[in-house]
Length: 183
Image (cartoon, rainbow, N blue to C red; front, side, top):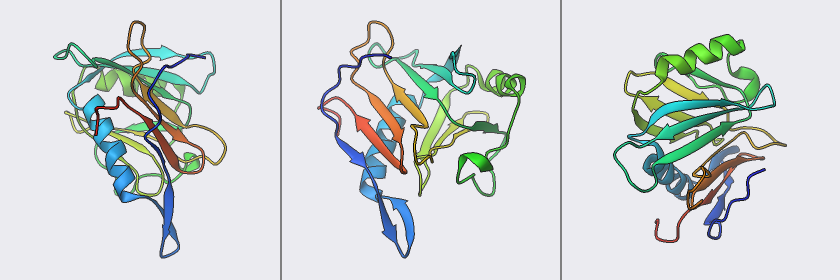
C-alpha cells in the first residue's frame, strides 16, 4: 500500500435521487471531471504494470509537455474494456462490461498506447471512467460496486508531490483530493 500525503479531501462526491434514479450530483461531478480533464487530457498512455492480483492493472499516463503534474497512474480493480467507437449505451455495472482474456486486454492497451487523450467523462449514475483517445477509441472503466473501490487515479509516482487522487469509492461515489489552489 502506498502512503499518500495529500491535502484534505475536497468532498466525497455523492449521489442524489432524481425521479427515483440515482445520479452523481452535477456540481460535484463537474469538479471531478474538471480534475480528470486537467490530469489526463493531452497525456499519453505509455506504460502498464500488472498487479499481483490477476484482475488489477495500472496504466501510466504521461504529459510530455509539462514540467509539473506530468505523470499519473490509473489503477483499475474492476472490469474494463476499450471500444473502437462510442457505444450506443455504456455498461451500467461490472457484469455488463464485455469479458476479455488477459491477452485481449493487452491488445486493447497496445492499440491505444502513446495516443493522446482528447477528453474524459464520468458516468451519470456511477463514476464510470470514460477516456477518449485521438483515434476515437474509448477506454471504459466500470465505476459501480457496492463494496469495493473500482479505480483510482493519482500522482503517486516516485518523487511526486502526491497532491492528486481521485477514487471511485463504493456506493457510486467518487472521492477527490487535489491541491488547495485547484478550483
